[in-house]
Every structure is written in structure tokens, then in C-alpha cells.
Image (cartoon, rainbow, N blue to C red):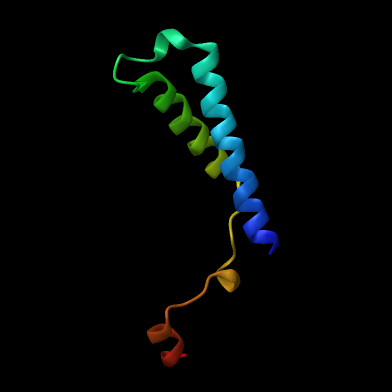
Length: 71
């Protein structure tokens, strides 16, 4: 349950950031509704967030079923 809550909160945060960027910078929005500048900011944020996550040890990584049968 905690994992589902974290995912929802994370998704809500990303949506809020997206909305705020578009509100603060309407000039970044193209006629078709796309915003390469916002997309760029979002992609960079994702890179930074991923880089800041603690690395999982090998003990926490689940092996595929075929790998488990070998051990």
C-alpha cells in the first residue's frame, strides 16, 4: 500500500510541476498545445530525481523465474 501511495504522490508532483511551468510560461506553449521547453525541463527533472534515488543492492533486485531456478 505504501508503494502505491508513493507512486500517486510522485505522479501528482510531476503533474503539478507540469501545470505550474505552463502557467508561469504561457509563451512556451505552441499553437498545437505542445511545449518542447516544458518537456525539456520535465526530462531534466526526471534525470535529476533518478540520479538522487538510492541505488538498490543486488539483494533487493528480484531475479526472473528462470534465474531463480538456476540458484
